[in-house]
Length: 447
Image (tube, rainbow, N blue to C red; front, top):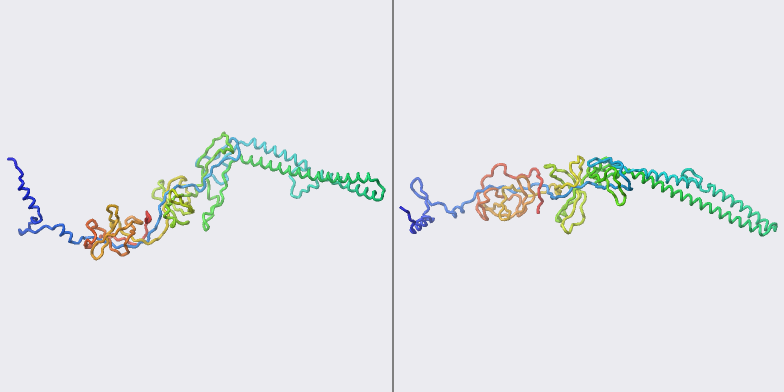
């Protein structure tokens, strides 16, 4: 037989489904009504709570940037020539003023010899075989001595003729001849002195040419720059040249290659990596919190879980109008050379080593539709409090909002709570309270 559903059956089912038809059989045969949602809402919600605690936390500002060598130098020759030797290659350590390469020097040695011979020629004109010392008297030069003797003799002849002419014992012609001879002798003496001075000036010029030729000969040996002692801060230690060194980052020529001074031909690129600079940009809103001398801890992907300590050495006084950020420079030692210039790094700049903060456990947090809140217990009822998150630890977070130390906050049962919901507090599981002992690094500063 085929069953056919009738409309009157639907009416009976709807009637039985109404609240008045609900019942539950008891062992004694009596029936009792089932609790409705309204009846359940009237019952207090069982929750566990915790007290807002105060903890000393470390406030930091996260930044990202690039590691750079303390100095990066491109070495180029001062003269042109053909490379005859290269003493270092990529990765080699180079000390201060070490010779990096040599150029062929035959042409420069010949230039030095030629300049020295020319100098000797000028010295011979002064009657010298070597450079005169500071006590050299040009009046002893034979040219000047000869001219001075002639001038003295002409002076004596003039004085004799003048006396004879006054006594009318000599003619006017003889007196005029003696006077002319004196003037010629005086002019010759002056000319001799000028000639010696000119020769002395030429000697100095030739000497400069010799020094220039010797310098070019010396420049055939290309050396690393001198590392000057470095003082990192006014009260910090002084780093000597022995504590810093270069590393060859790039070799750009080969033996036999011709290099030029202009346009310059780079030979090596050297980097000081015993001391590194970490350059990073910081958002403009933190400009009042960053100070010189603050500690900074760096992390790199190459060494996971390890932190490298440095300090803020410089702060750019201007803000980039495009990025709305300013640049800082963190200085850190790299004596083991594990950090590489040019690498990417993250850092935390410690702005407050021990700042008081209100903290709660993670389970007290409620997030819904982009809103972050907690429930506070007041007079046996739940109260919503909107909060923002600050610093965080492994099992706690800093709360920023309308909360105070000592407030009672719900840690379980939040899903059944709303504003003004009655609650009953049950004991919390042991070990859930947030204490103020210890300190955990913060991951993010308050916004």
